[in-house]
Image (cartoon, rainbow, N blue to C red):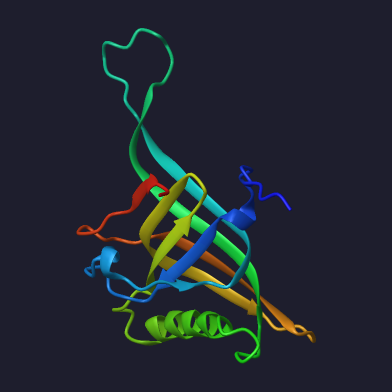
Length: 165
């Protein structure tokens, strides 16, 4: 049987891992946990533009430039509710509890996680704010989850996007 290398860039070739830790901890020293059976991952970098016209502009058109950018991830997936069958199922519960506990306090703690999103070509590592997380438990073996993540303030360790080794 021949062993052929798959050169296609498909979603199953990308992975999403996380760690619950503070934004001042070095991502290079982190032990990441796989998020589980992620079915959809969506990554977005959106620019916040501002008008950059000056009194010498003669084109008649408004000119814009990027002032800052926002980074977001949307994630959906499935997990088995029985941890003995699928050990990663506990990670979704861990994230749900982390999000809940952060907001039930005195709002002094943001629900922040470190995320590593590895694609075939590039790897994103960033501290992300868990904007929302929802879990659906139908009358079946699989539960589903959806999360929205937004870039968190991390001046010491800003997001990185590097070529995948």
